Structures are given as structure tokens and as C-alpha cells.
Length: 111
Length: 112
Image: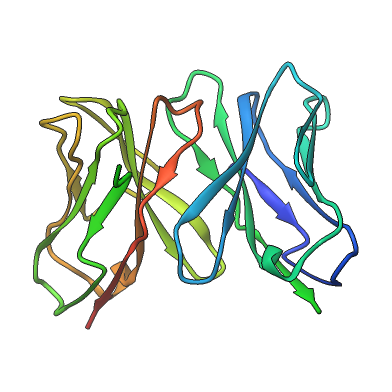
């Protein structure tokens, strides 16, 4: 079974609005990562947050991590049409050498 | 700097055929992995390697074989293709499993 579960499965918003996606996971982790996948393409790394960090920013992206609730959120501010993509969280459980992905959130930005 | 290169991009097989999906990286990454992506299932880990000569199983290893004779290459072998292996396959590499991964552009495989 997959480690991470994203919520919602699909999200449609207007350009300029903020988009928030959530990820829950099951076991203790070393870090949590977020990736973007444009249709028909490979995944692109967005941001990595370590288990001892609570918040991280990168441009219009803000990621939070709550290890007590085993959850993370990805916020994209001032969304653009180019942000239309699927977004995946991925975790590596402590003691494991493998990165496990969730099912993803499909984000659509309407012009 | 090509990054992670996967070949072929598309492949059609008949049930029972075997084939090898190629993956090469030029970033001197120790960690490499193979995922399959099915609609609604996200990415599932097939096999991974933490260095030349070292491989291990992921979530869905059955029907697949890997080897890692060099740092650069990590081929995935389908031993006897089945329709259930119809999927998009992605290879990824990184400095470690707890570091960011770089993905190839994928191989779309259909098994008839």
C-alpha cells in the first residue's frame, strides 16, 4: 500500500487564486517531498522538507509539515495557468531506502 | 548534461515476450529506481538500487528483474510480459533515497 495519500484528488480554481493540497502518511519519515507532473511528462522535484522542519518556502510554494499528525500541505499562491499539473507527495520511511509516492492531486487552473 | 535518459519512449509487446527498458544517468548518482504509473494509482516502486551491485525490491517487483553493473545504468527487464504490465514506466536517480529524485521522461508500454 502507498505511504502517502493526497487530498483532494482533483482541484479546479481560477487563475490568481491560491491552491492548497494535503498529504497524509502512515509511518515515521526522514523527509517529505513534493513533485509536479505535467501531462505526459516525467515528475519534477519541487521542494523537500525534513522531518525536523515545520515550514519551507520556495518562490510561490509553501510547504508545511506536521509530524505529530503525519501530514503535510502544499500551498501555491497566485496560481497561473502554467501551474496546471498533477502534484504528488513522496516520503521515505525511517530505515528504508525507498521513496514512496501518493496518488496525486490533479490541479486545474482556469484562466 | 542529459540527466536521466530512458529508452524506448513507446513499446508494444505481445503477451509472453520479454524486453529490457533502458535507463542511464550522467549525474554520478548512487541511487536509482524504477516506478510504474497507472491511472488513479500514482507511482508504485518496482525496484531500486543504492549503488552498483546492490538492488532491492519495491512495492510491486513481481515479473520484473533488475541489475546494476555500473553507476550509470539501471535496466529493467520484463521476463514474460503480461497485459497487467501495461503502464508508463519511469526511471529516477538521486544522491540518495532521502534526496530529491530526477526523473526520466518515461516509457509507455502496452502488452497485448
